[in-house]
Amino acid sequence: MKTVAIAGATGAVGAQMLECLKERKIPVNIKLLASARSKGKIIDGLVVEELKEDSFDGVDYVLGACENDVTKKWMPWAQKAGCVVVDNSSAFRLEDDVPLVVPEINAQDIQNNQGIIANPNCSTIIALVACDALKKEFGIKRMVVTTMQAVSGAGVKGIHDLETQIIDPNAPREAFPYQIAFNLIPQIGDFDDLGISKEEWKMQNEGRKIWHDPDLLVNCTCVRVPVLRSHSESITLECEKEVDVEKAREVLKSALGVQLKDDPQNKVYPMPLDTTNQDDVFVGRIRKDITDPEGKTLSLFCCGDQIRKGAATNAVQILEKLLEQN
Ligand code: 2RA
Image (cartoon, rainbow, N blue to C red; front, top):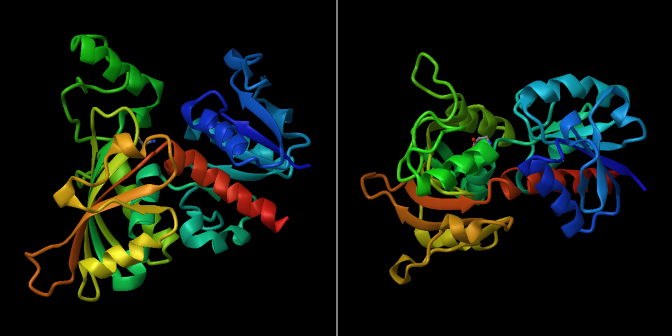
């Protein structure tokens, strides 16, 4: 039986990876790795071990759930041990020899791996799962995206800030520079000279790689919102062909990883509370952009659990494909 190590097992994504492995009954031995301060903790009957140089001896696959700096430190150890790594950090996503994979879209890229396969950013996964069938049907030239990202995207400190500030708006802040309760913060990541944040560049850079479309254009605005879990995204697609709402609904009904939630007259549309703790991306509010005289622009709204499909589930789905191949 193969052995899978979860590196960063005590964080939100690492813990979700363990839950996904068990939910999906994947027949592997599991090893939990985390920093020294978590050594000896028991999670689901498994003892957390300290992540160190020899941690990967006897390990076949690694699910990486650490921040970039920690990942860059342990990656050589995993490679030296001959592991295949599915990494959720952004450290290697744009490296030429690292496949960047959403299994519903480009699973075929997994076979090109040189020992590392990267998980895309959560908001990229959610947007591309929602739009892949539409790209196939209408051809997407340009995306205009506004994300509404849950506080848990910033980890336990983000959750702390929202939960404490709802009770006391003056409670000490740990994750965000401003109060997040009853507020919106239009910044995720540092801004460059163009006024575009690191998080915003990910959608175009990663979308081009996953879709194998170097000409894809994405104008993205990332906003932190006072929601605990699940990212929401307002998306407008400038397409190559004239779009049709009924055809869009038809192709989305059978799209992998998508649930169509589109009956606004009856108040049926995607909402983050509904997508939380499940793996599908909900898509709705599908409508033609009536300001486009050529009729080639479609707008929609989608939500997805950014810890599940936006991170852990996507990584475990990649692992399932690897296990099928070996
Ligand atoms: C966030 N996507 O939501 C980033 C990192 N998970 O903060």
